Length: 258
Image (tube, rainbow, N blue to C red; front, side, top):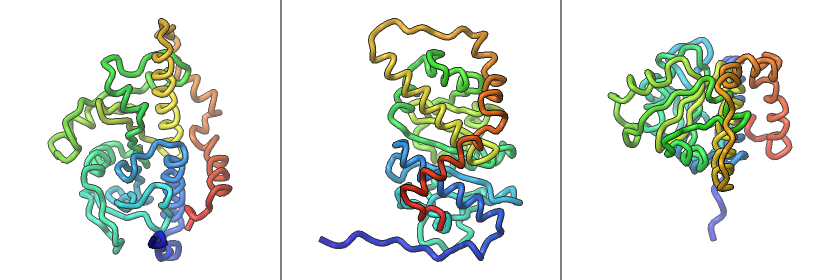
């Protein structure tokens, strides 16, 4: 049996700005966390982050690497059309960046866009009722949630206006029969938003599997969720949990920082 391939990437640390290196490390950490939490779909989804100081440059995963293999230096820099801006030997998945480029082009407040195909997320996306107000997690999602109908594998440029219209100024987007999407002002925010989205879907599927009538949360409580979220996170958003998540990764395998 052949020995497994050992991946090695030249360090980008001294070839980019300190600001870009920080974003690279945070984005690599985000990929590792998605793998750790079991949300990855082999190599087929994406998390993107805008390169600091630019409007049209982004970092994305090298297509073909598992999420638990990604490092800060392996991330690929691309333009708004998905063209590579560095000499990475790996390609970029065009279907994935169709979605991300559409969001980045209009949501300049979003440094990071996350997209997953988790089993529970796809299961809820296939339900006509979508996310139901049946958990504390769900009220935060429902306070800023859009839905986008399935139009096939995301390769059609003509789909972009409809997708961004369905997202609007919201934080969460459910892609019908497809998966989940979140945005964030920081990578930490986008991750926390996805954690909450995934939790809401998982709880809903498990609650429905119990077979009993579900208790729904009143709309008045959903309407106050944004204010309650700021109180719960001390207005720090994802940064409240992010340092602890990085320590978790370091205990497992600190190579994401390279």
